[in-house]
Image (cartoon, rainbow, N blue to C red; front, side, top):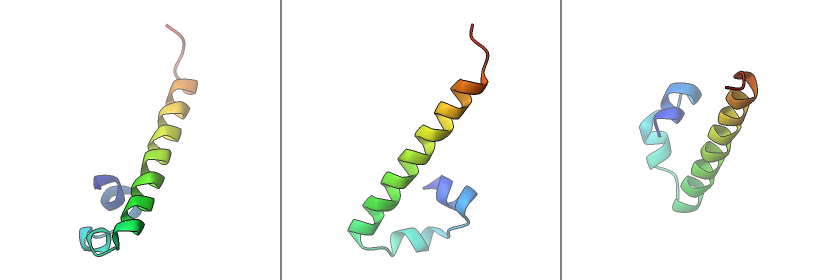
Length: 48
């Protein structure tokens, strides 16, 4: 949940106080964001 703290300015208590379903949704959104960031980095890097 470091990304929530670092990039989204969430306090850890904000995440931990969520109901289980909302935590799952937040995690799914974070996974999607990380996938998008990785894809963007791959597109920017020159082929080897």
